[in-house]
Image 1 (cartoon, protein in one colour):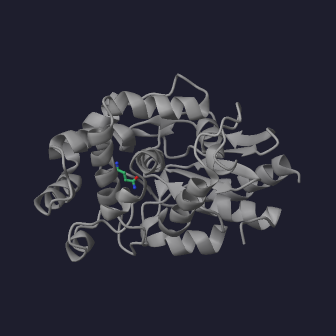
Image 2 (cartoon, protein in one colour):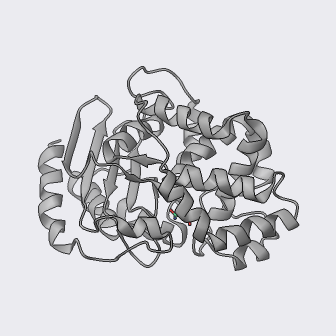
Length: 304
Ligand code: GLN
């Protein structure tokens, strides 16, 4: 498979559409990004890699971080985690309040904000140094100690995260948050502020394309059964109320973030990350969705 030729074609085809969508502005710090950034990095099972554009520039991974915290929480809590958060697709916006009320404070899945806030709460209870431990985990998976939080993004979200405050307080009222809501949100805002490049993300997510093994050291980090579970949740819930659309168009498990990043994995084949900050109305990268649709169409490879 000539992945580089396919990526070059995708870049040529899609660059004229680069102005589709809008950069996220409800977190003011995110609005400062150059909207015309566009990059892809694809890391293959055989350790070859292919890329174009701004694939090595770091950006705010936002909700992509929800996969990392879920992996850790699932390892620490096992099945008990599912008493606090379910695994059903939401069909509503990632920050929906009405759905949480209908679901009596048990979030539909760990990738909507309410669900990830519950996951953050479990990590706060289970870990002595949640912030440090999360960063170390991501750094280890990537094999790169330079990965860090972005203080300005975390502070910006803290100052404007009224919906998330509503979600955490509502869940606290219904008994599904153990820690102080402000502490939980603080940690949640930090996890969302992690900055990584497409290259770093695709290497890190190889864990989920490599049966739970580290892409470089081949250390077994999580077991293949856990990979099955996490990938299934990404497939059904990774794009909120656009999960069906992404699944239909791309045919891979993936996760997006309002920073404009999307990661998708094709187990035993590759992990791919794309970044284009302009979002569609569901909060997913408009060009990123198109790029991945073209990738699985042009390669003829998807999980289906
Ligand atoms: N930090 C963002 C929020 O909580 C993450 C949302 C996202 O990336 N979809 O609103």
